[in-house]
Structures are given as C-alpha cells and as structure tokens.
Length: 358
Image 1: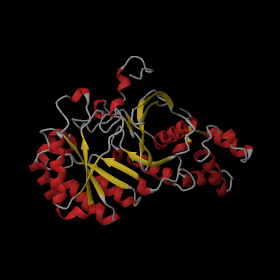
Image 2: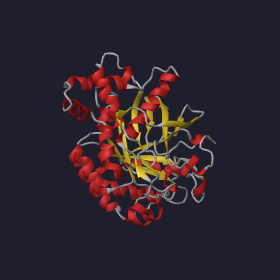
Image 3: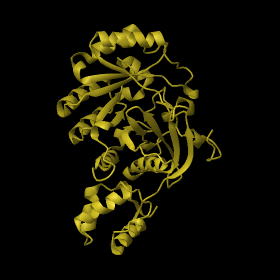
Image 4: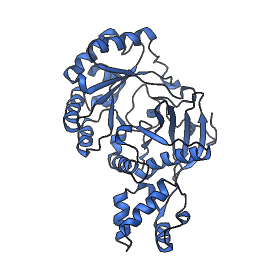
C-alpha cells in the first residue's frame, strides 16, 4: 500500500501536516468531521473543502484499507466481522448490543504471541502489529454497517480485547485511543473505553503515565504464580507480584479503578481455596479493584478445559463479595458464532476458501 491510511492520523498530526503545506489549522477540523461524522469514503465527497486540499489529501492518503470478507450474526444480535487487510491478512472485529449501548471489540495484532492455553486467539502466532489506522477503521466499518442497516444508534463503547496483546502494540494503541476520543470525531468518552492486557507489567506503568483516563483490565485468571504460569506462559516473564506492583502504580497515578479478569475453568482455578487466595491477593486494594468473573467459552482445540459448574461460580462470587471485593459477571455475546471472550481467532485463515463463513 503506497498511500497512508487517513484513519491513522491524530487530529494534531493532521493539523501540523496541513499547516506545513500552506493550509489553515481550521481546515483539519473540517476534514476530520467529514471523515468521522459524515463517514465519507472518498475525499472528493467533501463538498465544502477546496479542490487543492482535496487533491493534496487524495495524493497522500487513502480512507479505506479494510475489506469485509465475511459477516456472521448471532441469535443475541452480536455481529462478527472478518476483515481482510491490504496485505491479505485477516482479523476479526465484534459488534455487541448491550442495554447501555453498542460496543465494539477491536483487534490490535494479526495473531497473538501471548499463548494463553485456554484462548483461541493464540492459536495463530503473531505476524505483525496493526497500524493505528487499521484499528480505527474497524470501528468505522461497524459505523458504516449501522448506516447500511438504517440504524440510528452509534458505537458508544469500545473494548480493546480482540486478537493480540494491545500493550505489545503500544504506540499504535495510544494513537488509536487519541483518535477515537477526539470530540470533533467519534467522541467516545474515556470512561467508555477499556483496554485489556495479559499483564505486561512494564507497559502497565507506561500506560498509566499517558494519563488517557481510559479503563484498564488485566487478564489474571489465577491467584498464584504456579497456576498462572501453567495456563498463561506470560506469567513466566511477568509474575503476579510484578503485576500487582504495576497495579499499585496505576492506581496511585490515575486514581481510577482497575479490573482483574478471571475466567473460571472447571476444577482448574474455581475452588473455594482459589477464591480465598484471590481475595487475599487483592487485599487492601479492594476499594479500587473490580473482579470480572468470565464463564469459559468453548474452543475446539482446548478441549481439556470446561466451563465451571454454576454452583462453583456462585460460591466463588459469594466468597469474593463476603471479603468486600467488588465483583461482576461478564455478559456473554455471540458464543454461537465464536465471537465471545477467548474465541476470536480468524478461524477462516485455516480454510482454503476465504469467503467461507462457517
């Protein structure tokens, strides 16, 4: 791809770029609103922008780079999109319908090297990072889908929980967040954006220093190092103690609550003892930590794992609550189309025909 994705520019970057080429700063906001609010697909559609500026933008940037390869809709209204990137790689993006609005789960990498033993995303090794523009365009493609369906609702929430480790694609992640937060465009509030990480302790500290004020979720899934290292190999690099020190720094720096994600695996990490150990681990941080209990979603290649029994899940929840831990249960979306937590993997990559939505 010779031209750069327009979606990869922050508003400040666009302002600087246009000013350096003799245009007024105000022109950047004008162009920005055409792209993000009116969702034009070609610069020539911007009817009140002068031809010189339109030609300049056309010569250097392209608006669309993703191609919708496949779309699946679940019984609960969840929609999973399979997008083809300019280089032929495939990624998945999910639109979820909630009582509080529409949320989009975006992907940040082609494949994933974290290798959590229960997660489908790690079945495909990382090929490359997505650019900030490719991450932003996933949201814009969903917005265009809503336009086509004549739906007046817009994307109100974003979760960075798709394929890949977001904090391993740090610079592009930060630009993505700046772009979608910009009030002249998508204007998605920081409190409605959640970034999930497998626990890259050093990057959690760096993320806190950005002061972006978005929500942070850490995939913990075990209360001790022995168990966590067994199911999440990233724990061999960043231990639970290192993660919790990073959490302390994040809490002190941002004064924002943090979420610890915990997938309940039958007879693996769901016992009373595990719940008590988790409560002790959180300890004095309990006022600023929320534990999000996640029912395990089936993955064909990980048949050694099963969803915890309902009674075990209730007991785990009750123990945490009795110890004063804020606790919630993850709502499930799109399990029947492999769009739920831990199921994204671009399964179609393994198939010989790209257009197969099976």
